[in-house]
Amino acid sequence: MENKVLISTVGHITKVELLHTIKSNILENTFVLENFEPFPGYHGKNVPSSLKPHHLFLVTRKSLTYDDVSRAAVKIRQNCQLKFGARPAELFIFNQKLSAIRIKELDSFEKIPELQKWFIDEGFFFMKKKNYNNEGLIKVSKHFELTEVQEGIFLDNDNPLMSYLEVPVHLSWRVFEKITYFIKNNISDSNFDAAQGMIYLKDVMDVVRIYRKDMEISFLNELRSRYLEEIRKISL
Image (cartoon, rainbow, N blue to C red):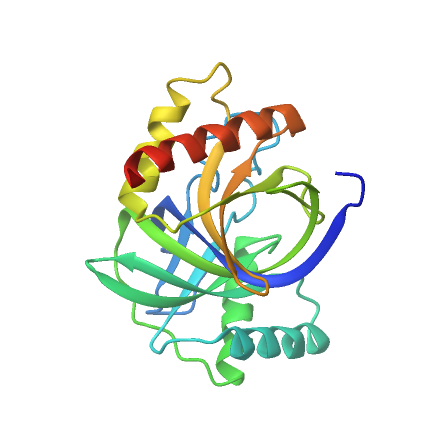
């Protein structure tokens, strides 16, 4: 397409990750999780280093809104020297849905207690510590800055390793996982991580989020065609 379309909006990403409880460098008797691999389907030099926290989840007692977390994060950053990003998240673990503040870009585990105290000062209450070391389904709200480079294909302006493929329907995680597994086993280059996404435009747009070093448009075209074909099969 000749005219690239720039999009600034919000939505969410849904994915399964391996989570574990952090047992030190947290406020006493609070529940904090970290993911082992933020992009489990991709293996390469661009995977974030484990020397710093990947994505942290400060599990809260009550459900959260995008506005609540975003306003609190802005205020905290204005009043302290911590660098971090914060968004609301839902975690599906222990056969229940839990709410959390997803933290990224924090440069040290030792700064977690300080950050927790700031959020407590803003009226957030954290759940008591639980031990968890298993996969969990995660739904994270986020802001998107995108460029539509071709019909149905969007590049992330904030992260060159991410792109989004528009698909016509929302799938259950189990069906999405099954389709992705099939595609990965029937494509020449399977080194990518895939997650589900939903983006608010004039209408809701369902997408597949792709994480990969080399975002050739030809590869993204092939990948989107594969997803569309598998979705068509289950819709017949």
